[in-house]
Length: 214
Image (cartoon, rainbow, N blue to C red):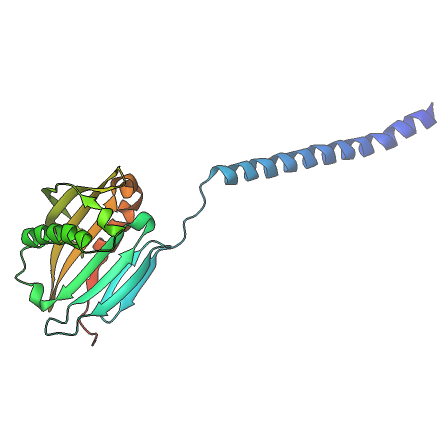
């Protein structure tokens, strides 16, 4: 009897320890599983934005967008043109020149629409199959270079091989001290929602220091 009681007394702490280990292991496993599920439920962190800064001009844009051109006209205007391309052929074009100061933005937008159609006629055989539908213009307001700015929205269709692709182009003019900027954005309607934050970022963070020499 004494031996039986001793064995029971000896085994009882061992059983309790084993039970505690089992409970602890199960709890840790459950916590790890919950952590894993929580991490899977959370969206992946987006890549950090990129800052483009060169010769006095700077702006931010989403990672994956790319500046594909930064050139200066070799004439008296010294017109500087910067193209920022996003996904699905979305594009922002920045133009800088003191000669743009007296440019009327409505007239500039209308002239761009005219040139758009004429350039298709004078392009290659494949590009000549492009057709541009009628343009519907309307006033638009948004922040450019940190200030509220009134511009022009153009809605039109690009037609190719029986397909109709609605697009929107927007035009803004901003006085930036010693120079004037005209900014144009363009994107197909089907991609507009996805790229709008990128457009907003680039236009709102646009800055001109005027210290660069080109």
